[in-house]
Image (tube, rainbow, N blue to C red; front, side):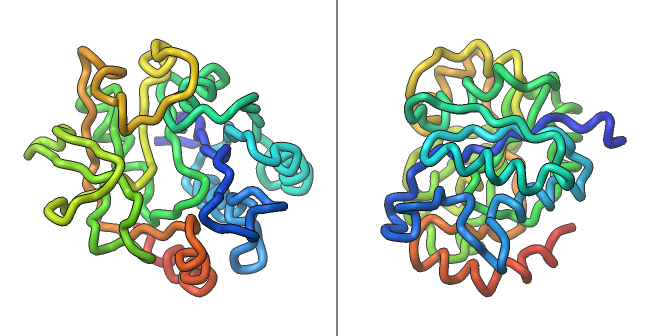
Length: 244
């Protein structure tokens, strides 16, 4: 796959990050500093190294700061487009809103507060070869740094079909949602406008198609809680080295 074949990348950056308390009172979560650079910089750097060149940032909370980020890193990431959500749209509504600005037939999407050292090339290959419309990257629950609270639990069939997707992982589920996706732009554009989350409506949103998971053995690191943010400060570098 050449760089010209790479799809657009959507980064979901609209959340308020309330669990981080004072840390996000004046700074949106993706722009918090990790290893002396905004967390979003680390996400875009890893995508850029894989050949991605167009980045759609779905923003809401303290949105003007993403404009400052764009200005600062324009030379490194010239393909940034900022898409403002006038009100919080949730993961589902945000994907629909961002898809309006996507130029590729399929696109990848990532949560702006988590990092998984899994390259997209094999995910894109599987998605295309099996003619899927929606692929979610699943990671093992015991590979999550900082705990699995509030991670989406998954029940998967042998072929990777997602049989159940909930907002909270249960003790008998070995796989959880990593917050990384590959999706058909056409399919996402058929979704309704408004505020809603994937956990509650994924099955109905995709009908008559189905959602599938790519099983990744890579760990997951997020910055969504003070504990996780502290872990990220000293573990992000080692996560970068785990890419393959």
